[in-house]
Length: 92
Image 1: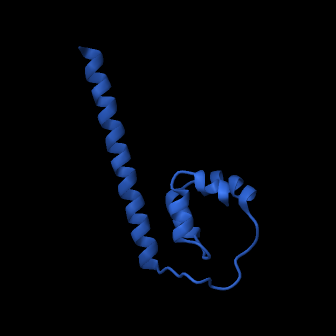
Image 2: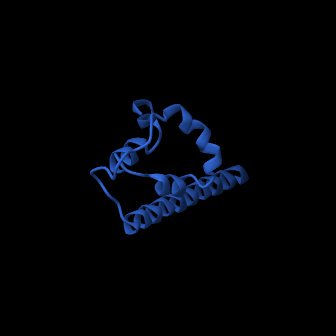
Image 3: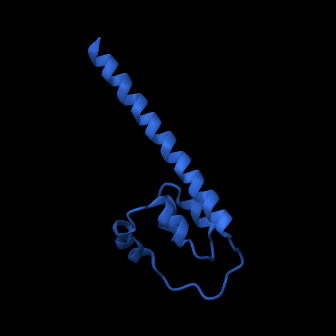
């Protein structure tokens, strides 16, 4: 998974969900899971056995989902602001 750390947000997510199931956080960030699953095959090395040392709760997953949604909304607002600025500049 070393190469996966280069993925945006990869290191944070990998460290947070190390040795445990990260299915829900992945689905939260990648709504079109079918699209990204083809890339997962490259990094698959085996199934996790046991619970691992770290555990998350549904509250943890919901908090992560909420944070991801807030980041999406900020990104959308930023893009809209940039587009608006470009449109104004073109009218001058």
